[in-house]
Each structure stands twice: as structure tokens, then as C-alpha cells.
Image (cartoon, rainbow, N blue to C red):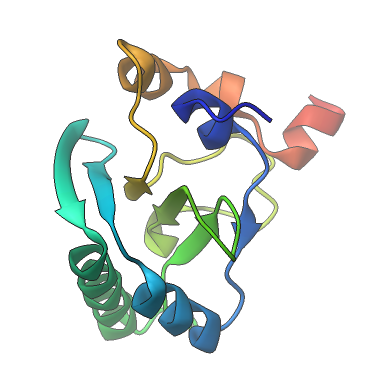
Amino acid sequence: MSDSFTGIFTGRLEGILSEEGYSALAASLKGEWLAIKFAEGAIERRVGEWVGETLEKLRAEVKARRMMNISFPYTYVHTLDNPKMIKIYDPSCCGSGCSSTSSPDPWWVFSAVEPGDGELEALRKTKPEERMGLLGKIFG
């Protein structure tokens, strides 16, 4: 996998499967991060503590919705030990669990890797059919 922004964004990420794992991730973030509200494409430089606080706010927002026992946003990290990227998905925008049609856009992306010229814009413009989920790739 490439260490470029696009390489990490489109590469294999590990899912956070428990509230304890989510809390540990939020508490572990240090250094400078880029905070990207993906739909808007705006990038802000933030410190890890701010990112951790934002993760906790997103958890509170998801819990307040009381959807199907979901207690934190769908969260994927570059690596659990030393994440370079965290992708957060809003559970209310994710559709079926199988994701047989297309993958939704992330709600937030937090990255320690700066996107190169045009990288973020290119990812945001990718057509949904080019972001097919697993079943769509197999049977599409």
C-alpha cells in the first residue's frame, strides 16, 4: 500500500469494533492532524486532542439518535497501533450492512498525511459505481 493520501484512503483499513476500542483511539491521538469534513472538502489543521474530542462528540451524536443499538460511528483506521488516517462514517447514511451497491462517502476523515494537489477533489468526485462494496464487486 502506498503512503500517499489516496493510497491510504483507498487501501485496507481496520474497523473499530467496540466502544472500548473507539475510546482508546480517541484518547491516543497526538500530534498534528488534518480534519476533513468529506462532503465539503474543507481541510483544517488540528491537534490530536481536538480530533479525540471530536470523535467523542460524534459518538454522542450517534448515541442520541438511538438507532438500532449503534453507540458510535462506523470507524476505520489505517492501523490501530499508529494510525495515519481515520475514516468516520455516519451510520444513518450507510444503507445495508452488505454494501452491495456502493460505498458511502465518509462523514469525516482525519489524516496525518497531507493530500497532494487534486487528490482530495479526485476522491470526492469518484462516481458511486466506482466505489462498489464487496458484493457489488463480486456480483456486479
